[in-house]
Length: 414
Image (cartoon, rainbow, N blue to C red; front, side, top):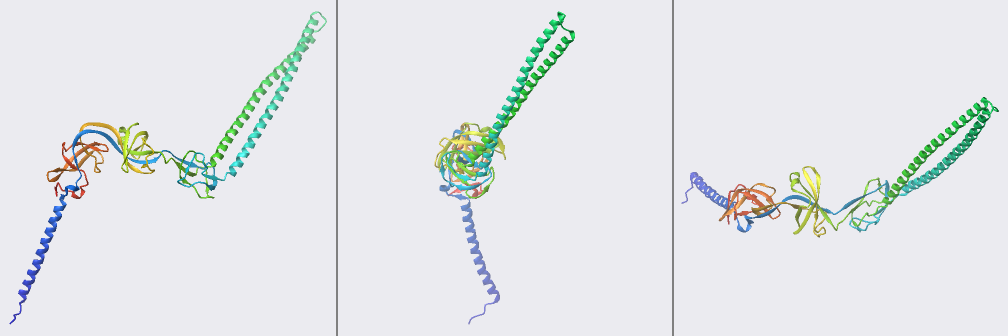
């Protein structure tokens, strides 16, 4: 006969079942945690990138950020206010020197040029007229001077005659005085005419020079306007590739507006920036190295900016081969500038973790584990980094990213 199970026994049975499941869950959790901890503090040897500390020379470099740019890039602007009438080329077109790029409406500028040309012709005619008037005036004064000079000579002869007659008693003292007065008066008139002639000639020379200067200024303005008209026919100043062009026909544009941009996409230079603290380590002629898409690009520094902008010094590098296919405008990469030579020093391979000289936490392989070590690194180049302290020759150093083991002083090698 079945017996009813008491409430106490039922509670005890339920408690034993719950404890059994809880114990199982704890065991599973502990096992999972153990596996996780083991995997977190262990790493496969095949996953490690290891470099061996060696002794050798390092040609030290300064690392700078670089950008590839065309060997030349020229902006073409409109010399006048006008509107676009025709567009002959599009971005990407290769053009030769003198090739028309687009046409502007230059009728207004041409009319102004013709007015200036007419005004210059009128000024030249006025100059000739002025010279003719001056020749006439000076010729008239010269003739009056000759006449006055003849009168002076005649009066001198009359005075000599009166004095002779007065000496033999046939003349009078009054007639001698009259002759002397007439002679002195004519002499004064002659002197006045000569002074007037000199003054007129000096003033005439000044008037002619002023008019000549006006004509010279007009000729220069006309030549400038002629050049402006020529520039208004927007043409390629040299061989290159059109990278930008204003192609809105009918668009009103002002003087100085950018109309097109022309670049040499067959040859390149490299624009680089480096913190101004490294400025004393870069000089003209320094060799450089950069790697673009697996291709080594060698070059040298040809220009250094004398000023600092936002804490950076700019310099220009010309590649030894400035027409490599891997070079493209706007391409960015790090460039290494050779700045010195460290002889017989400890070194490891350069890796992404290295930024600049200083202290680093690196893992060093010891047997079947790697241990965290504080290492001081110095100068570097594209291939090697100088070891100043914390490592010895022959040590094996892990160079790949170990950030997931942050805080672990030792890591087992699986």
